[in-house]
Length: 137
Image 1 (cartoon, rainbow, N blue to C red):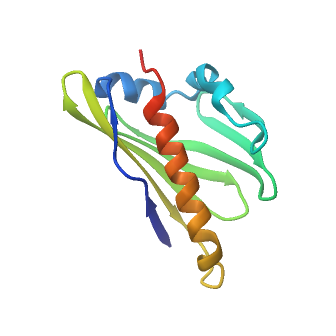
Image 2: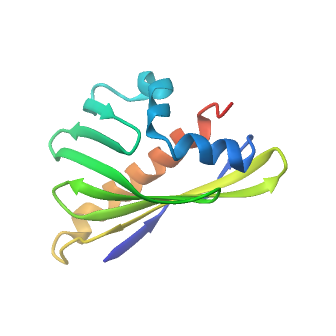
């Protein structure tokens, strides 16, 4: 398994508000317009799952498999070209701010690591950047 971590993002909202929003995927409706239509197709979600079609990768579907209120939400792939886990960690900084890190642990075949690692790290950073700019009110 290969592990990838985003940089730590500062968020100007309390830990509880951030956790409440990332632990319920129905809240993705508020950010639907931020999803780049040219890179992601068929963006669907419900309370516990999210799926997207990413050309040329194919469909990726994640399910929440763990919630540790108020600090962590864990996801696992239900459908993907390769198995991976993703978790979002949220920690308090002050009463009104928090910090977040997104981590992926992926089962990448040794021969593919050099080709997959760069795009995976870049995508992970984009997810973390997007999560850091969401209004968590």
